[in-house]
Length: 142
Image (cartoon, one colour):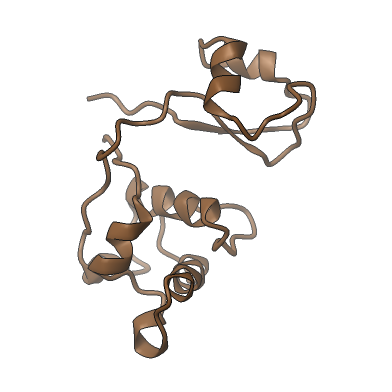
């Protein structure tokens, strides 16, 4: 199955109309998928805009195991996790998440664990099944 771009990061000079044309969707669809946009004439660089319909409920990445989260690992799952952490106000990324596991991912995930009430070694920033399942990382199609 081909992976669909789900979000677009606004760049200087972008408008919602331009973004809609780029992604072959309508302005009305963009507004429907982004209820946080209250004025379609005001967007800012760095803002994430949903450019595809939300995935079907239940289409989440399964927990890949604690050994998956190593600096040598590159995977779109890590990037998807990072954006979910940002959505949960837990992200500490300077330039946004990418596909390589990093210290920013670990710190962001630790924030998520704290938000869930975990403490001590349970909030070390390494994903575990219980916290992962509650994050609802969207399924990534490669």
